[in-house]
Image 1 (cartoon, protein in one colour):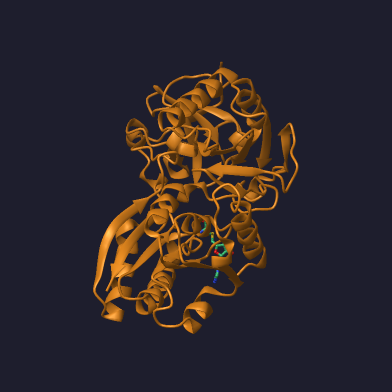
Image 2: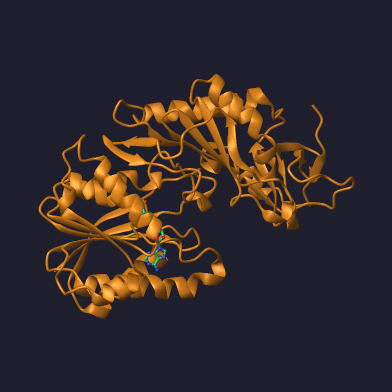
Length: 398
Ligand code: SAH
C-alpha cells in the first residue's frame, strides 16, 4: 500500500520516537503534491526512515498517528483496534446484566486518535473529531456490527468535526435505527433515558460513572444539591443511596425535564422515592446566592468546561474559585462537596489551587477525602498526557 508521504524536518522526530500521536504543522517539510484532508499518509523521518502511518489534516495538528509503523489502514486495522478496545472493557467488568453503558473507544487512549465510540446497549454512538475518521466511518460502523458489539450505529459529528474542513458532517444512523425517547441506558443497575439525537456529546456523561457510584455511598440521609445536573446522573445515584432530599439544578429547561424523567424511570427497579426530589431551571450562581446557609450537606458541582482553550485559563480559574467559594461557604458543617473540572486546558494543580483559594476565602476547615479522575474506559495513553481531562475533589467541610 502506498500512501502520500509526510517528511519530518531534521531533528523533529523526537516526539514520534516517544510515541506521541500528534504531529504539528511546524514539524514537517513542505508537501510536494497536495494532500487531501483526511488522507492516510506515511510518515518519514528526515533521513527517510518510515516512522508511522496516520491521518492527514490541514491545521495545527497536521497528522494524527494511527500506528508507529508501515501499516495499511484498512478494515483489518480497525477490526483489530476495536477488538483490543472491547477486550479491555471486558477486563474492566463493564459489560454485565446490570451495566450496558460504557465508552468503547476513547481516541488516543485507544490508539484511534480522532474517534470516540460510546455503547448504549445495542447501539453504538460514534463521533469523529478528524476528517480521517469521518472518511473511515462506514468501515468502522461495519466492524462494530460484524464484531457483535452493536446492532445500530449512530454517527454524530456535526459538532465535533473541524468546520474548516468543509465536510458533510451528518448526524444519522449509518446502520440500523432506533426510536428516540425509548433508548434506555443501564448503568450500575440504574436506568437513564439517553437521547443521542438531541443530547450533548453522545447523550450521556459516561465519564462520571465511578464518581456517581462513590456519591451513592455518601448519600444516606443527606440533603443533596446536584448543581449542573444535565440528565440527572448524580441525582439518581443520590436517591438510590437513600438521600433524604435531592435538589437538581441546571440552567437548561430541557436538562431539568430529563432529570425529572430519569428519576421517575428508576422508581420501579430500585424503589427510588421521587417525592424526595425537586428540580429547578436557574443559573448556578443565582441559585447559590439565594440558597440558605446549611440547607445542604452534600453538594455536587460538575460545571461545563470553563476553559476550552489555554487563553481562557485565567477567567476559568476565577469561575471555579467563585463557584466553589459559594458552595463551601454555605454547605452545612460536616458537609461533603464533590467538585469537578472537565476542562482539558486546566491542570490538576491549577484546579486544586482554585479550590484551595475558594476554601481559604471562606476560612472554613476543609480536608480532601478523595481525588477523582476519569474512569478506566476513558484511558489515558501514557505517551499522550493531553488525554487526561476530568479532575475532581471530594472535600469534607467543618
Ligand atoms: N453533571 C452532569 C453533566 C454536566 S454538563 C452529568 O453527570 O451528566 C454541564 C451542564 O451545565 C449542562 O447541562 C448545562 O446546561 C449546565 N449549565 C451550563 N451553564 C450553567 C449555569 N450557568 N448554571 C447552571 N447550569 C449551567
